[in-house]
Length: 145
Image 1 (cartoon, rainbow, N blue to C red):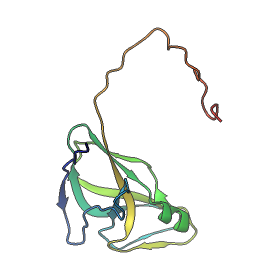
Image 2 (image 1 turned 45 degrees about the vertical axis):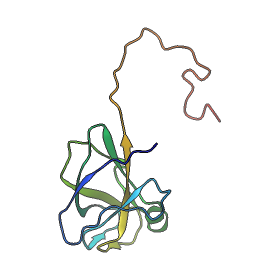
Image 3 (image 1 turned 30 degrees about the vertical axis):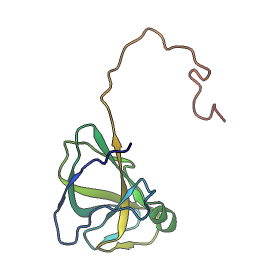
Image 4 (image 1 turned 135 degrees about the horizontal axis):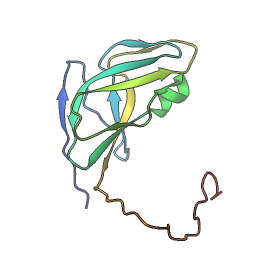
């Protein structure tokens, strides 16, 4: 049984949009630009979304790139994923970087990133003398190919 999580949102400008999904089965909620702005070649630009959210305790927000924007135009997030902690309630700003040789224009309402919410539980780290043996042990970086 799934329980909806209620997220408080403040629309900070008249051009702000509530994050939304295109398809019911989507995990990510599209985040839109609240401003017209140019992303210059090889530069990082903070794009305003015009929204602020309040996440409940034990809920993390991750801002991720949009695959179409990155593959078609080489525009992505410089800090992917960007983490939103429950205590942050300021405007969501999206740091986009333009990896192309051309400038790229973002318009109000353009989908620039996606928001994925993860419900977490607190953990407690327990110090041990030695990790237990497993089939994989310390094999990493392609060891399961």
